[in-house]
Amino acid sequence: MSTRENPAHSPGSSVPGGAEVPSDAVVSPAEGASGLDRATLERVRERDPAALGRLFDACFPRVFSLVHRLLGDRTLAEDAAAEVFLKVHRAAHTLDPGRDPSPWLYTIATNVCRDLWRSGAYRMSRRAASVHDEAVADRLSSGADEPERVAMVREREALVRAALAALPDPLRIAIVLHDYQGLSHQEVAGQTGIGHAAARKRYSRALVAMARLLEGKLT
Amino acid sequence: MTPHDEDLLGPGEARVRAALLALPQAEADAHYRARLRAQFMNGAFEPGVESVARISPLPRSAWFGTALAVAASLVLAVVLFDQGPAWQVTRVGGPSALLVGDRLVAIKDAATLSAALAHGGHVRLPAGGTLELVAPGSIAMSLSEGSDVVIPRAPGRWFGRSVRAEVRNGEAFITTGRAFHGSHLTVTTEEATVEVVGTSFAVLRHPEGTCVCVMEGTVRVGPIGESMVEVGAGLRRFCYPRALARPSEAAPILGYSEHALHELQASTGLLLER
Figure 1 (cartoon, rainbow over the protein chains, first blue to last red):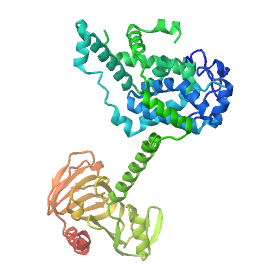
Figure 2: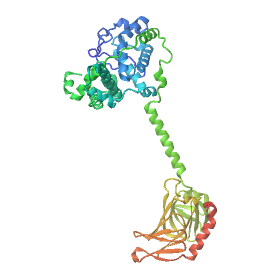
Figure 3: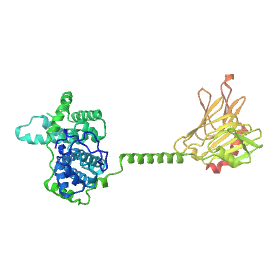
Figure 4: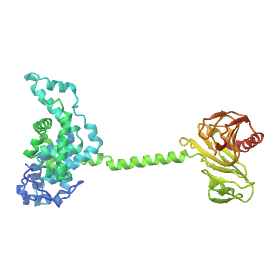
């Protein structure tokens, strides 16, 4: 589901524990990222199990990917995704069936991650490999032989993940929403409650910070 | 990101972005996904799903507020406990009233007088008036008739250990107690500065100049703006008015000063825990 072309929002949808979803760029839900029609979303509001199942199937991969990217930990991502769908279930009656529910879900997911970042559980789990691991960096830049290639790719990914996890939360959100969720800067701005220019600037700062963290470690 | 944005990326940022986009997407475990789907459809979530809300500590603003309140309480406690003892009037004599600041206080009203001078202040005694004050454990002061003296607050327990008195006119007899240890008293007159770290001494300020009599310990005395000299027990130093341009002189302690200081010590010894 690509949201870049479908920046639909639900002005009336209240986000549990978070900000109001912005109300610009209304499109038909059929055109939305979820691909769910209005009738299905009406039934979601009534918590019809079949409709909820369709909503889950349409949105779960993106939601899981989002929280996994933001949290950098599979176990935490599973906990967070479960909490997101619990909140969605509880707030289903506030869903606007005339709009694509994806931005609403992203906002809930981002808020759940923010809550987790503030919690002790997240800090305890932040044991990702350090980007300053000299041994890993040396091996990456030494041009190792073919048999080690797969391992090197894994290590490179680990470094990038660690650098992403090391970013301040707002910068990480900017990268994940823009590069992985495919949101435009305007949509990111709407999700995070900042202006368009600020969202662009934040994304740019995030890349600069990543580049600094990974300096000399990406060949 | 628009093509225009990508053009603006530096080589380092572009490489980072490529590395970010190359990261494989995380796939959820199939069993987990199926279980969560069933829970979502039925609204029957496992206990503990709302873990985030439970394990979330206080929001940052609450932490900040709590830290601020604790810091403020500590500062308040330090300020309160740091305060030295309040001055108490132990002896007062003479005609009807004396001036504390601009306020006339009846000599008979010792309670009001003590309250008015609890943390020091400017006191002016009339002819025939006398006043004896004690900051228990720390310092005692006796003022003779006609004195015009700025009494300092008593030194604090941890901070504000240096205090400053001023003898504008008249005679001040001063002795210190056990709690004064580590404090620093400076007495100034028009002609002289006297620095004290614990002793019994008198500062006699008259139109002819300032005489500093030391009964116990040592004080440092010097004409205003000039170097200080040490004055030991049993000695006095006389500083002349600047207009006379006469060097200060040393001599044995004045008998009546010594007597007055002995009297002050005897009178306040218990309160000063000497």
